Length: 304
Image (tube, rainbow, N blue to C red; front, side, top):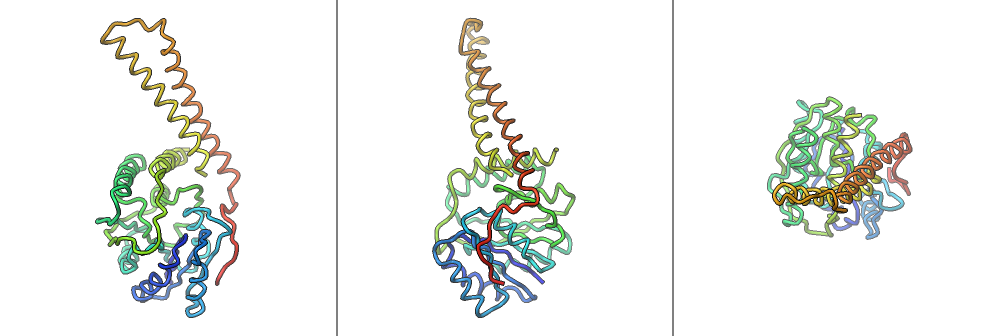
């Protein structure tokens, strides 16, 4: 059986069309697990209507918005199928591509979708390109589209997977680090018709912090690093600019730096920035210890 996990947040108008497309595309036995991440637009009521006509439709409703990572984890825990597919609830991913991903699971343990021709504004595409470039560099995994919502997994690879914060972007990288085979395939991508994008301007920054966090854990949940990392990197960058400026004065203008308070300030900011950044990593360890074996979400009700 194929378990299809759909995290949704205020996607009422997309629920029924998405379900109909899934029903048309999937010929095998399947279940659809919607995870309502604190919607307030009637999304849950729309899912209940579908369930009344088709018991393959299930839903997990959170008490509030806990984020996409928590929604996916709740969906994974509720899956009954031996194959798990994730797809976004905004209709920009095409359910017709699901069989292609499932077929590739004969060769791979994880299959990642690649939105080869994205129909998004430049304000989303450009940060995504930068994020993907950094992701390939830091993880060593040659994927083109880490944040694509359409993915397929063999159920066993998700066992004991612990994710916090916003680490959902790097599930394939985490699984590759564990030794599983990760593949990628081009998929269709559509413009959003209904609802509003949940994209935020801080996405690139959060993605960078999550990348650094992934590298940290791969070598030895994520929200403390977002704060400490931002402050630490900012101070480090300012200190570096000051020190670089003074270095230019020394090399090209032969100015003495021994009597410049700015030199001490630059060095101090670099050291303090590094210290704060490392404090963020320590906070990550505390968070990971605290959330171990705990759920990072609260379920209000279920439809089974």
